[in-house]
Image (cartoon, rainbow, N blue to C red; front, side, top):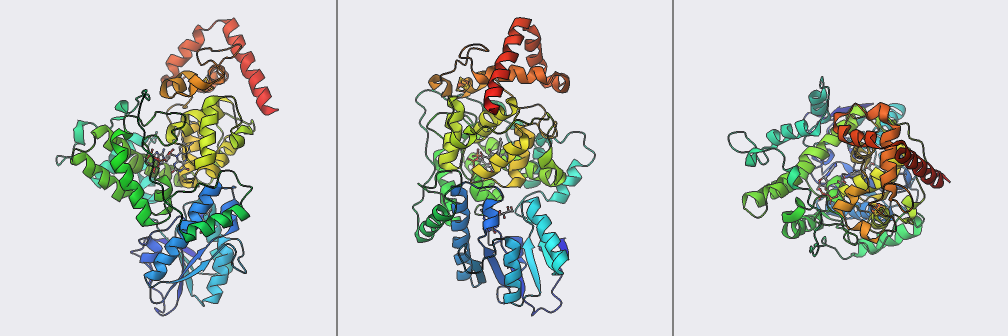
Length: 526
Ligand code: FAD
Ligand code: DLZ
Ligand code: SF4
């Protein structure tokens, strides 16, 4: 028996002395998570469990597993210090069943609980499993809203209802009004415009000095976790050490302060820029902390607004940053819950090519792909444009099965959870939903990568050549993608310019593009 409520309107226990089992998941590491707010510190038992299933349902990057386990252990210690009775199950604890619900079953019996309290999980598969478990076992499970988000699923569904297009920009304006962020007293947006994105597309310039994110030394807990991960998940993708992520709220806040001081002012200008050997550019590197509950989204936006109002940063940086969080982050979550469970199987272009091996090895002669995949392996991080316009763009142009692409993104980044990853991958980057999320496919030739990065200077391919010997694969794959999808895309007005250019090609040029693409894709498949 499961029921969904907000923390405020939950049903009181029949007997206030009966003990509740409060399940806290690895991405709910906040003292203000709704399940803890609804529980009683003197009576209830908190369950936190490291389990094999959560680390392997996709084979997560070693750094992600280490981050989640170290942050879970630190949070459990914080809760114990605050007086909670915490039942913490380590991966190696005797009897660990390997699954969240297996651990709920054990703890429920061990502690003689009367019901389970849990904040709604971020992924559909776990929500579904919890509901089924409650029904099968006849255990009362109370699912509380995750109110760390600004827009509830219900509010998003109401916003979406009856709209022909679900564009982020319209949703974002509602969120600005709702939060009052960067709003003037007369209800107009600061600076007279909602969006300063056009000022956020500067290519990297020579001699640009790029800051590094704050790095934290490993404490005893983290060192133990690193040993565990090396031992138990050594065959997963990714480099485990050096490991420098924050693993507590205090550290995550220090990481964010460091971003405010060193990078935010240039975040807007260089948001889309890419440089080899500079994996982080001026990005915040906080998504992993936000998504695990270590940072509060509204609080970080308020800090950025303060910096703008104090004159420390320009409006393009402040607005650009806040849009990512109250706009994109909330919007993709809304789309996810609106469209699940079917969303992860969408495949608008009917792409069925397998994901090339080099997504796991970085062993490719395309310098841009080598750089983005290499840093993904080493840091469990790539910034948005690297994910969208390099690895994502290539996968779409090469006709890779979007579900395989989705599983790759879910596995390789420290910030990856399906509620945020799936709409970004399937909707924004692969156009697998046919345009629900993006107004056109984010497809680009090598020209875009050359403009926004220095990758092409070190590449064996020639970015200026469309086809033939040494031509950049992004070029012939791009034209081939447009060519093979004429029926699906031709009417899209945002692609009119590209189709006019394609139409200007003569038969010989088009034939060469088709031939080069076919040979290249055949080689990839084999
Ligand atoms: P910054 O660039 O500094 O941005 C600040 C914050 O804004 C981020 O921390 C994040 O919380 C938020 N944000 C920015 N863009 C987005 C976006 N498009 N959607 C949601 N939130 C956003 N983000 C994830 O958090 N988890 C994912 O699994 C994930 N998968 C992605 C897959 C693809 C194919 C693409 C194109 C994007 C994906 N993103 C994902 C969005 C974005 O790339 C990351 O949020 C960002 O790179 C994280 O780095 P950062 O903290 O330095 O972000
Ligand atoms: C990501 C993750 C990992 C690797 N391990 C655990 C774990 O052992 N125990 C746990 O409670 N949560 C873990 N998580 C986070 C969950 O996968 C996450 O809560 C769900 O995917 C829902 O978002
Ligand atoms: Fe990438 Fe093409 Fe540039 Fe090489 S030439 S780095 S493959 S865009």
